Length: 222
Ligand code: GSN
Image (spheres, rainbow, N blue to C red):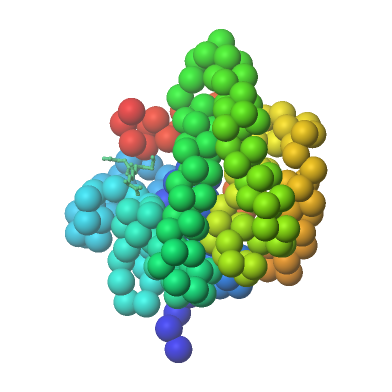
């Protein structure tokens, strides 16, 4: 039997968190090796295991996969979370890219000054409530199903729940005007694998703070 996937990244959310979410949703146990210093990163580079000299990198099924999107595609496809045909996969891709755009704005907050941060949070909440969440509220309303695509649990559902929870950490009432998304959040959070990941002590990482931002800047020489 193949060993557990091994994740190489810093000990924080960043680009790896969606990978952790997807593995957890698929019920796959994984191990993590944290890059804590520039020397750790240099060691991976000199070992020749980072194709583009960057993390995330995931060792899985005899491969050392880099590029977040390639890693996520592999896990989604392998665990049947990627729709039943090309059209469903394309819908999932569109939904995931939209939620990724929203999450990317949140991830980048660690690089803001304190004043810039407050302003950027306002901008993110505005975009979440006028651009991204209305799309998913309408999708759920129009088809009346439990899941975003194909009446079946998929990567799109996992990714949207992650984005909702991240946005709620910035503004707890951000779903106030989105009743179907509130119900979606409860429903997806109660899927056993996800419920487990949401419990304390899981490999889910906490919200990123200034200390983490400083550490990342140091490791990656930003
Ligand atoms: O999506 C991806 O995995 C790549 N397109 C980008 C990966 C990336 O930028 N990784 C950063 C650390 S994670 N923060 O965003 C990285 O390894 N930076 C060091 C470098 O030399 O680029």
